[in-house]
Amino acid sequence: VPPHPGPLLAIGVFGADIGKTILYGLIVALPTAIIAGPIFGTFIAKHIPGHANQELVDQLAREPQATTLPSFSITLITVLLPVFLMLLKTFADVALPEGHFFRAWMDMIGHPISALLLALLLSLYTFGYRQGMGSNKILKLLDASLAPTAAIILIIGAGGGFKQMLVTSGVGDVIGHMAVNAQISPILLAWLVAAVIRVATGSATVATITGAGIVVPVVGMIPGVNRELLVLATGAGSLVLSHVNDAGFWLVKQYFNMTVVETFKTWTAMETILSVVALGFILLLSMFV
Image (cartoon, rainbow, N blue to C red):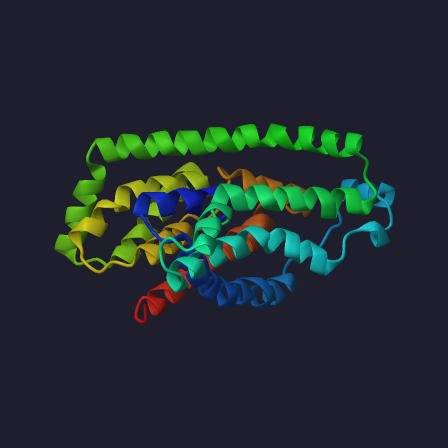
C-alpha cells in the first residue's frame, strides 16, 4: 500500500482514491500477513535449521545498548504518520464540503509528498535529536541515506518507460479486448499481468507500474470496475514467486545465512502465499465494495 512508490504510481495510472486504497489495503493485508507470517512461519521453522550470521552478531555486539532505542509507541507513530495523514485527507474529502478551510489544508498536508516530508521531519527529531544525536551525525546519516535512492529512482524510471512503451504499442488495448471477450475478472487479470512481469523481471515496483499501464484500458471497457481493488490486485501480483532475479531474494538469503534452497522454501514460499491469499481476499472484498 502507499506510500510505497509502486502502489502510488499505480493509483495515479488507475485514477484510484489513495485513502480508499489504503483502507482496503489494510483490510486485505492484516489477515494475509497473519497467514503468511506467524502461521506459515511456525510451520516452516520446523523444517529449516537456523544459523546465526556471524557478521550481524559482531555488529550487534558493537552497537549501543537497546535502552537507547526509541520506544515502540514513538516508532509506530513516526512510521504510520504519512498513512494517517493520507487517510485523514480522504476523510476530509468525504465529510467536508468543497471550499472548507480544513479540507483545503488536508489536501495539502495529506498529499503523499507532503505527508512523507512531515514524517521525515518528525523522524529527525524522534530518531535523531531525541536520541542524543548531534546535527553533524544526523547530516551524515542523511547523506548516507541519499545514495540508495538513486537505484530506486532508476528502477521507477525504467519501469515507467517500459510501461509507456507497452501502452503506446497498444498491448493494453489488446489485452483489454481479450479480457472482455473472455469475460475474465479485471481483478484477476491485473494480478496475472503483474505476476508474469514480476517473475520475468524480478522487480515488484516494475511489475506494479507496468502491470497498471497494461491493465488500465480495461477500466474504460468494463463498467463498475473498482479502481482501488485493481491497484491492490496489481500490487499482490507483483509479489509472487520471488526468485534468483530479485535482489530481495539474495538480501534475505545473506542476512538470514540460508542456502538458496532454504531461501526458496521460506522467502519465495512466503511471498507467493502473500500474493495468492491477498488475491483471494481482494476478490472477496470486491463482492461488498
